[in-house]
Image 1 (tube, rainbow, N blue to C red):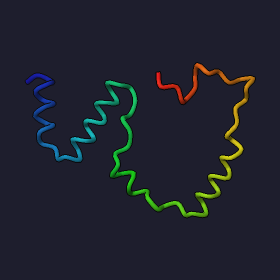
Image 2: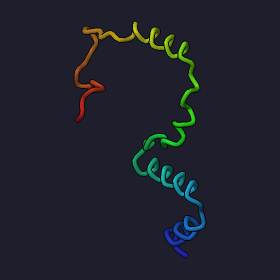
Image 3: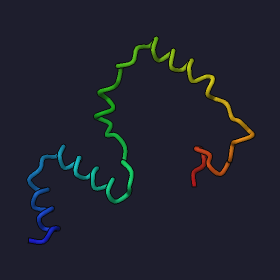
Length: 82
């Protein structure tokens, strides 16, 4: 049996969740980076940070929202859609 045929045979025996995991893994192998976290997994995190903790996090980030014009290179802007 060829490797492709074996992969397809084994894949057909998996349930939907495991197929999603295999697909995510294959994307990582092919593209070298993850596709992201499925929405279902993110929903589990909803509400786990208290309002007070979220406020503290926002306040801590306020000092980080600055650009050092001496070292900033616009070629590497995170807002660039290239």
